[in-house]
Length: 191
View 1: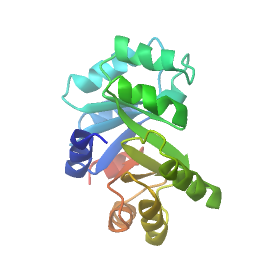
View 2: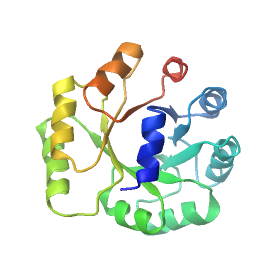
View 3: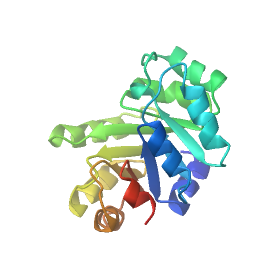
View 4: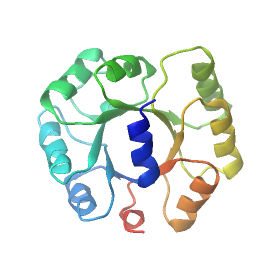
């Protein structure tokens, strides 16, 4: 795990997840230090990342949401060669090893729909697979006891993301043991 990335998360536990240019512009007026990019395409992603990096922030690209990129190592190579991104977010565990070899911070995203998500995290932790730097679980408004359960079975820190709307949601996730939260809710960026 990248200690540097964990230190950044601990210092700035609210992460802006941006889904359009308007959100990016607003994010860049906040005190947010880490930005998850959830939009763009193969032509626009270098400029989006440059806007973030010019302000001294840490930028991670959600590989699954960038049009024109496939869940393949070559897409990671493209992001490394043509952008200044610090890391990646993905639901595809097969991308983590190559991303780490390229020096990226890595976030593996899980959707918590039922107990199978918990089993997937546990299986990934047990079988010695290359671990991401952090796991992001969605939705982030899980009960604190579920966040603690994910922490118990995971070998890496947890980020809660999705449906976080206010200070109460942020505090519940952090009290439950999440290292940070990510949200597209712009009001939360300014807490």
